[in-house]
Image (cartoon, rainbow, N blue to C red; front, side, top):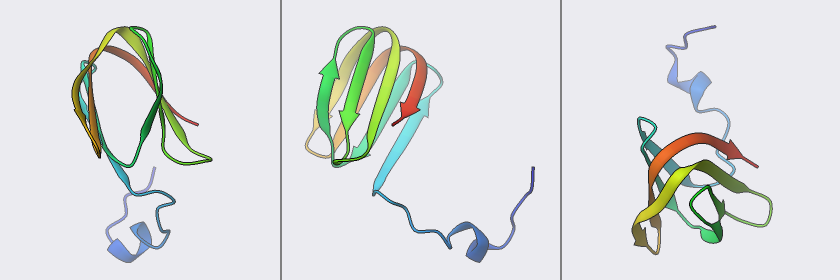
Length: 84
C-alpha cells in the first residue's frame, strides 16, 4: 500500500458521480447526493444514483432514519455495502 502526500496525485481523476457516503460503524449509513430508492426492506436497500450506478446496502433490521431530497440515512445492522 502506498501513502500519497501529493494532493495532485489523489485528485487527478474526476469523480464519476457527485455524492458522499458516511458510515457510523456498522449501524448507520448516510448518503448525500441525487438518488432514487429502488428497493427497500429490512434486509436490503438499493439506491439508484443514475442510469449506470447503484448502491446496495445489506443488513438486518434496516430502517430509514432520515429522508430528504438529497440525503437518506439508514439505521440498523449494516453487513455490506456494494457499489454496482
